[in-house]
Amino acid sequence: QVQLVESGGGLVQAGGSLRLSCAASGRTDSAYVMGWFRQVPGKEREFVAAMSRSGIYYADSGKGRFTISRDNAKNTVYLQMDSLKPEDTAVYYCAASAAWATMTNDYNSWGQGTQVTVSS
Image (cartoon, rainbow, N blue to C red; front, side):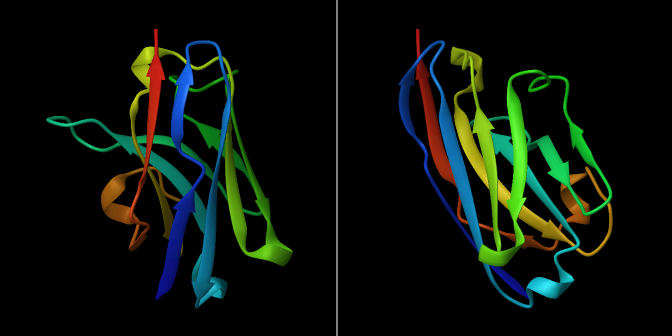
């Protein structure tokens, strides 16, 4: 099992930027894919971005604005979010999967989430 801890959330004005971090520990060798998801109250958790050693994929909501990256030496994955919009407000979760996936149910390790609030 992989343990994940997110950080970097906060309050930012529309148009601003935030960088989320996700530190992994434990069986990090099983974290072939690292993903970011987000969730607002009353809605399902939605996919934001994912990366493996062979590829990166973004949901339409973040294309051109969000960048996922990974520092293997630090066992940390990042989500750089630029040009933030009020509709980006959500709890952001980091997740790990042993195989390529973009669906919530395919990820077996999750962090506790970090709140991102974008004011208009």
